[in-house]
Image (tube, each protein chain N blue to C red):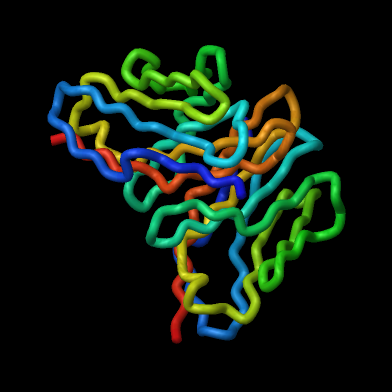
Length: 116
Length: 115
């Protein structure tokens, strides 16, 4: 079974600075998706960024980018120019593309605090 | 686009009663919906995958008879917690997937408190 590990329960960053959240995963599959979700205090899950495993190029979405290292099974999220609104729980998630499975496997999350 | 709603957002019920939570895709058809449970300060745990017109697929350890899932249409799935007990108190989140797409869109969640 696939597992997702987020080794940083909590992180903090100064406003306007850059922070990187770590995520590693374990799988024997070659085709899959990786996601970063944000869960603010409202508890609404918001998709931040998505990476297809077959793509070598790292995904970017404005201030959010990933460092996807397929061989190392690592998928870190970099937030540049951090804003107060970025404060939230961040969950890394894995989704298989094989066997018809569509379920997401989540890591335990990293609580990000943004200091003014 | 791709909005998912849940109703109710909060519910308090007495032990032994049943409560139904609705998950609706407002502007798209969802062939598959997912139900998650999230304990305080914890991650989301998948409970079951709900496919329209067929029986839900439950994850290991989730009681089918306790957590009844119905996906009667392409825009509605319901989760019924039967004979609720205080340990069922939790935050329940649904998500929906557009047919043929990789993204899941999440509802805002339902906080269930069983007294």
